[in-house]
Length: 135
Image 1 (cartoon, rainbow, N blue to C red):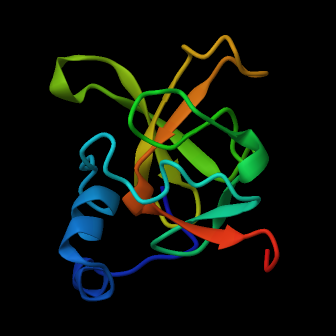
Image 2: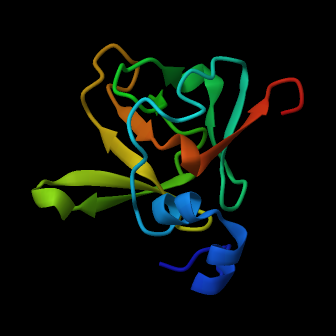
């Protein structure tokens, strides 16, 4: 797939910290319970750390008790790209930013307490937060 924001591997390495690069560009995962946005409960917008695309709004965030920020839906249906992921000996659905292709996390259909039944389990390091006062 081609993306609106495309950069060379070296450009990504130059712009992202080693930890950000490992998650966003190599589909890594941060340790559960360690992300700075896990307990972010203010009104606002969650954006892709790599390209600043608006991905999630605070009104779709919920506490899934899984160790990562969780949302029941993206801001727009085309804000993210869903890809089958067969790594680690299981079948999951990877979530990528539709604008730059960066890895964000995975989506699961195990959240019956939400309007969609889905849990978009995102890495904090893949996101930035913009307070609602400025969003």
